[in-house]
Image (spheres, rainbow, N blue to C red):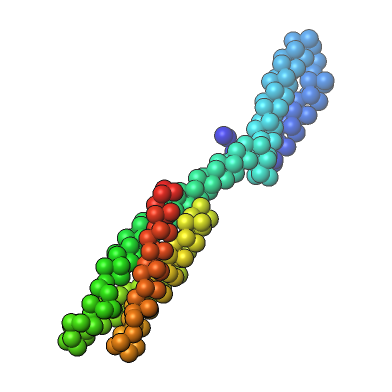
Length: 214
């Protein structure tokens, strides 16, 4: 759009006023006719450029068309937020999947652990090997629990996260119980192994609930 200033518009209207005065003072029919034609032309030009100047002022004041730009910016901002939110949800789902696989593997190892009676019959050497494996399971279960506690779920995955955290808590208890058994007397009945398997089975059940909802 042509840049029209208020000063230029004022000059145009001043010229128009002078033209009217000259037309009124013109002598003879021909001179008056020509003068008024010129005045009308100047008046139309002044009105046109006044309109352009008015539109320019409206834009400077943030009225009219610029509001469309604001709406466009708001729409762009909303679209960007949606993309960011989708990215967060996608990232969380990927992390959740990896942790589900991790706690499933540890719980399977706990459930596959030999009974305390079988370990006791194999001698001190074998017992030390199984104790090392039990310590590893305890550490892995604790590590999985900490990773899950550090997750920040999006609102859409809050229910799934709560179930995942419950599973991780049971896994940590299972890891503790299976390792704690080795600190007790050798002639115990292996009650801690039974507790560990109970917690591990609970982990498996929760995993089935989570994956069944997806």
